[in-house]
Length: 315
Image 1: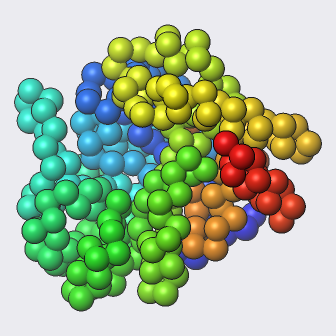
Image 2 (image 1 turned 90 degrees about the horizontal axis):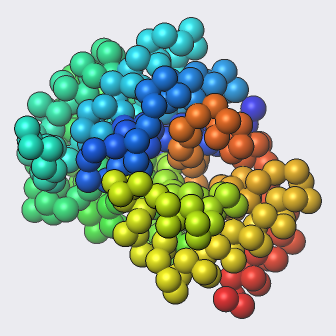
């Protein structure tokens, strides 16, 4: 299986990794709706059995619950994948979330406990919303790496200017931005900067939170649970919903030529960008994992890339 080196680090990743956002379950602000923990653990084990060698989660997913589930799944697996998580979003006893970059030391200890690990393979700042605190936060991250609590440090959702500020303190192993056929904002400045500075890129939402799987319909959107954050997401509302479903239908046509889903085509399209190291792909059951696993080894032809671009240009 093809592995890609993450920036200048010593981490070599399968082209897709298991994204554990949805396995955090319901009852929190950015939930994907209710989720069965046994199905989550089965999905993680199945991904590992297929060859996925890394899992990405965050402390805030399910307000700690996703990390707990990942910890249980990894502990009970004979093969130990790399485990990545994030800091910078904390919550109180009322389950109210706030962003801060000044509690990272407490956060890493709690993540290590939930994940049942002695060291986190990649620790990332989730959001740089508290911009004034970036230098203090990145200094703490570098200290944690020197202390051995984390092996590598990265950022998520950072701008070029914010990454430059971090680089003045310590190297950045990776950036995690959103990137899909429906969100290409990173192409102009962020990807070239990462290539020039040997920063690996792990993109999230390559299927735009399920919109490009080929299985999404207006009926499914209308029937989403009340606590599914996607109900209020811009891409899931008209007039964008009709356009996005049309794109998914087109990807489905390309996938049919190769016996793969529209979601595999959507993921493969992001992986064709030379800046991308690997893509985060969520899975709530072993069956969902099976549906996207071909993206780990599937490549679009140059002609198909042009075909997709022509379709997008016509929308």
